[in-house]
Length: 492
Image (cartoon, rainbow, N blue to C red; front, top):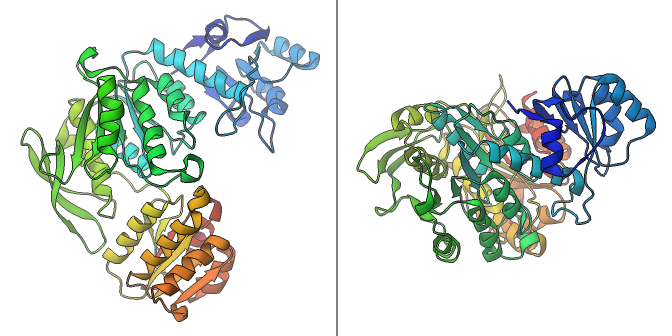
């Protein structure tokens, strides 16, 4: 639990105390006024549609210990705060916009506050998790595996940006031993700011893909942006305590050598490799997929320790996520057997390769939370690896944030899907859905087995009723396409 006074917060963030006492104790931080209550600090954010400052009074009435405004307080609000014993703060103004268009004043307030809380909890082993795809699955595996040996706090959902990462740290307790912090980014410089706040002890990069290439321009620039996570780490030789800092990379990452030589080595950070090569520190071999797509394989560590593992999550690609998690488990000296058991038994993450079914309805592989070209390819592999007694169907939505590469990369998706043994291929969206369909036709996929539909609702109306028990349906696309509504509609 957080334990700071309002005076501590003012000193750490540069905010101004407008009303109330600096002695007030703050035990939690929220950006949602509905969660404000006794001992909490409500941080107001100004968004495009909602201005959190309008809900300051509501938070005060709910018993908040402190409220952080990004506008000047009205006399009425000051009177209310004084009457209710709430500390009213005004955030320091920030002229520079944040890269992801969040409110700069409240974002900087959160970042500074989280940095102070991290400074006061230097005993934490912070695990930084970043990469183009697979961050959340790897983070969930880490949280499960490490919790078998340590008091572990982890990012909820995908709270991994300039707002989510500070909230993750501020929700951690001094009693926690390990904090698993997912760190996302859309622009260069974001990870630098996040790693300066979190100061990870160990970190990993899942891969360097094409996510956010529209903002960053090239995969090399994406690799440079991911490598920013090293900036907050301590050199391996300067480690304090029992855990030596390191960066974990996969041996099939074509930018791994670039990241190691250009960023890790100059910073004195050791690189540990995972994958399928005999030279990798943590490796897998003899991978076999069951009828439902779940992998079984032999795990071997650098010290020669080995065991057979079966994962509950479907897909060959999740083996890489597991190996990354196990490299951290090994580095921290956790119980490997207990970690494997915990990871193998962890429940599926909602809307991420989640297998769903209902009476008289098809089986659905719900991977509708988000998408990239590489994650779509991996999801198609899962679809084609599972036993199916009916039709094999892929419902693929557009992928966002690809910028000038959108037409080319959507073409690759369509061509890749066309090469799979699918009975029905459905593309959902606008112009980029057309690009996928055109590429599929070029590869010889028949129009008789393909649909191009503008929205998730149109897809539900057109094919939802035709899907039958025994069919196996993959649903995958960027969150903006809203294909979760299609899944719900089919299973209703």
